[in-house]
Length: 165
Picture 1 (tube, rainbow, N blue to C red):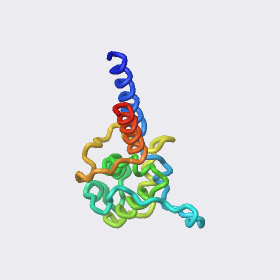
Picture 2: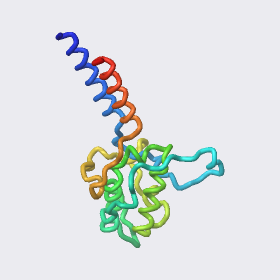
Picture 3: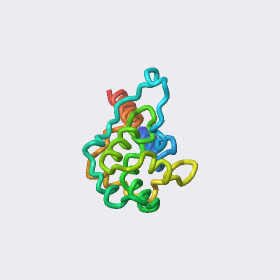
Picture 4: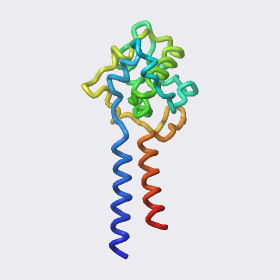
């Protein structure tokens, strides 16, 4: 009995650690440079974003990042506060999350094109989101499970069901 419990414990720990490994604490520089398009877009169609950016509260940005000077420190801090809760979705270059987010940021804030991509650079990994409160989710909107987390959960449930029956 103890051996069976021990193997279950390790299996649960494995899936928990795999789920943690999939989350991101950076917004990559590639996601910030999403505005450029290439001529091969038909072959490179992106999946629809699972975050509802049109329903978010953009006042985090618009209240703190104001023109005409757009101070880099306050604009980048506001951008990180807004975007870091969605870093996993934004960094997924197979979706249109980054371009959708920037479209709405520019729509609601009327910011110059490339403002955040040009001003908000921290290191080779991109913007560091580790010291940003990610519990806010910018107005309480929740992100649907990412594919990797969903796959991990599904695999764990299948293994559990196979072991029980």
